[in-house]
Amino acid sequence: MSRVAVPAPAGVFGDGDEHNGEQHRLLSLAYDPFTIDRLKATGIGPGWRCLDAGAGNGSVAAWLAQRVGPTGSVTATDLHPARVPDVDGLRVVEHDIVRDPLPEGEFDLVHARLLLRLLPERLAVLDRLVRALKPGRVLQIDEFDATDAPCLQAPDAAARALYRTFTATKNRLMTRRNVAIAFGRQVADAMSRARLADVTSHRRLELWNARSPGLRLLAHHTRHLRDELVQAGMTDRQLAEVRTLLAHPGFRACSYAMYSVQGRRPEEVR
Image (cartoon, rainbow, N blue to C red; front, side, top):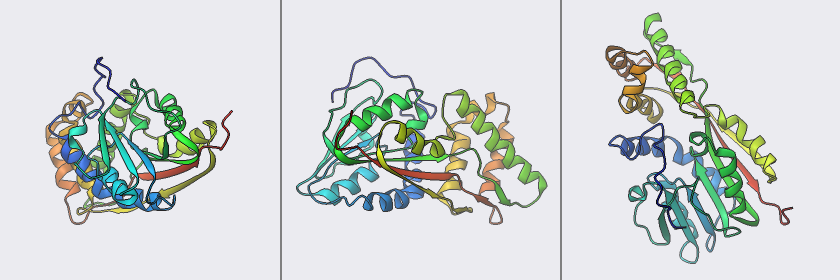
């Protein structure tokens, strides 16, 4: 899986910029437990060959390597693989999932989290992930439905309105950058259309408060996406007020819905 020389366009969260380390750290804190619980349900064990596509900081790939070792193997792919730790049984590859080839019929388990929503070519990439599976083996896709994360409790009406403005502005700019913000609820149908069998979908919601990685991630986005949020109409003062609100001990919100969807490649694919 060698990387082609043509550079890929930068994603909505930038191309390896200074904010991405914190972005991936908070994503891992928020969603690794759910992702790993679902991966355990596949029956994964020693000897499995796994692919973690768009591995981010490699926290899930490292767990997979521990689970399948020492006789199994894990390949972690990413545009910026330097973030992935050096772990026994883990092969790290610089790879553009849209442009670079994947081996076909190679893996017992293929996993991708919060990757396809960012790609305009998401359905074509899904087909490639399916083809990378051995017949009879499992694909797991974890994705947000980020259309709503409603405020449940705020200090006052102005704070509630500010939070609505921030989340709506963020979703508008993501949509303009071809991010499928509702893709989580569409994954099961997409996997069925890709001819996977036994498709199952689990949804996770949680209460966000000031200590939650989810709200800390939203606060981080006021800096990570600052330029685009300002271009979309927010001011630096508003963004500072959003950070103060998200750290307020009395603020509560419902999280995005995270969907974890599994499907099995049929023994005979026509």
